[in-house]
Length: 452
Ligand code: SAH
Ligand code: SF4
Ligand code: F3S
Image (cartoon, rainbow, N blue to C red):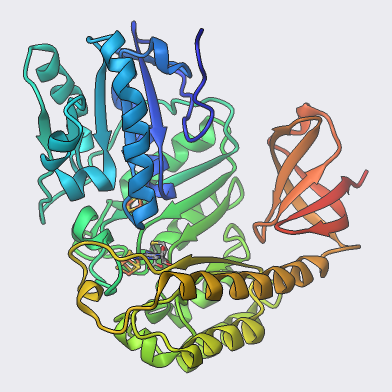
């Protein structure tokens, strides 16, 4: 019997004779990379939702926390049996864990054929050919400082999407002391604006109406390019060419680099949606210092104040880490106070996870696992309450919703402020912007009805 892998796999449309199954863990950037892989393989492979009938299984991995890495091992354990039954099956591990482990992955998992880091994925067709010609255990995990992101001139491998991600830069130069990203994604590299504009044009032609620009630190966009452009310049260029056709978003902006000019864009640019994800990580200045974040809570709050005075309805979300080495009860209380002060619409909170090769591994005063869990629960309890109160502010209001898809017998859409809205209606409305009356707020979503 065929079994579907329902979690984390994406179905792409393509026409090749062989069958491929792509599984994606991790952030939006990995989702974007999986789409690129599907585009690169389009002529040779069609995508299958069934693991059993795949000739090629590609796993795009994330290494941000230990848990993410474990997901890969348990999946590879399951795939061992599949490979025994079908020895011609090829298994490729891509992305951030691939970069982190390189050849060492073969020692633990000999049934893996291919290990490719985030910069190597563009060579996927060549590497697969080498495998077919009999080469074994191929690795491509070189991280080059002079790497350029190639332009993939191929149609979107998934039709009917209303929303799309678009990577504008890769890598990170910030070296926050807890974070593995700079080691697995390499140095920052921006894509020429011409490539980005061309890609947006293609997305719009295929019906996309909501685009999120991606980068680990979008504020550094433009550095090292042969053109005179920075991130706000890029936003303005996109607005000028496509402002009436799309909703525009971006992630992630580092608080230290959030400029007045970028804050102004939320007021000036019609296409830019009223949502900012601004990861704060901790409410304590001494923790922030040891995290190498280069801002104080006072400076962070000042920027938010400016933003809210220009754009009062803006949705603010954040990321938080609890139990960073040396985080005292008092430091943690400061994070709780910050939540009360800022009143985030949503916060993604994580227990600190030690990552190999990062400076924080050598920091003293580790917080015990049990204490981390306790702090995380306390924090989530408070944030759930604040988040719901924030969402409740929209009850009784009429908001602009872009209908993105169908879920069960309902439609699912999104406000400009990034709230998910469930509405009654027919599937013909997918892709349309509707005025919706919000009847009820729930945790992380809203229920509403279309105004006629
Ligand atoms: N570039 C983005 C974040 C990318 S990683 C930024 O600078 O904000 C997404 C989130 O994962 C981070 O914001 C952080 O909250 C969390 N994270 C990163 N490393 C972590 C670690 N070692 N343990 C726990 N959470 C971590
Ligand atoms: Fe990691 Fe910091 Fe870079 Fe974000 S800015 S990816 S948290 S090192
Ligand atoms: Fe994970 Fe790599 Fe993204 S570590 S969060 S997939 S950049």
